[in-house]
Length: 219
Image 1 (tube, helix red, strand yellow):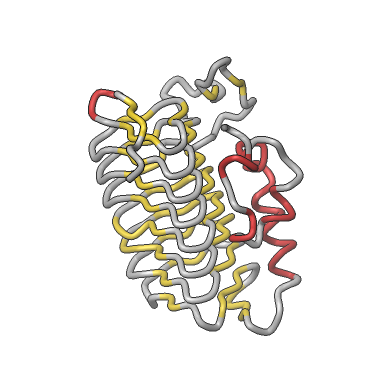
Image 2 (cartoon, rainbow, N blue to C red):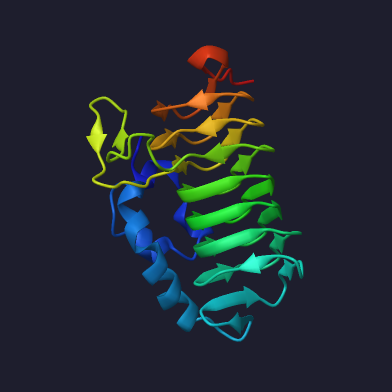
């Protein structure tokens, strides 16, 4: 359940061809910058290059106080709000929200992703219609600065110092939660507010207070 195929519907991102090269999503993180540059140079007239290596779709709304660092692509009908800080290497899909004081760095946001309020998302991939509640963040570097390990069964060494969170499609992250380095959250999973999440959260489950994981009840 940690594979790209299991986590994501690739029809909802410009990065589909790039991601198809890999088995696991963290393998794609080091090449995001170069991938965005290559994509941007091939975009059509529906995108405007607003600065060097920054392309914004003509239907996107970008607040004048937002910072768009290179390289970056902002997709159709996406809203980048007041004081958003896109540090660079950010591919933001269609119909997304990048909210007030949100910081993005080295990320892929699939279509319809919402990071609307005070979120930090770094070295991460957020799947289709995933949502980060207010104040929730991805922690992308371990406190001891050692290489990130995915705490699955068995554990998987990424070989990378910086890995944030890999969220599958339709994931809901509760307010003020911290997704620790190398967290993988399966499709349709939900995270309770104020959670500190580490490891792998299965698809169609709920991560509750104290780290208890329960399956979602299908109605």
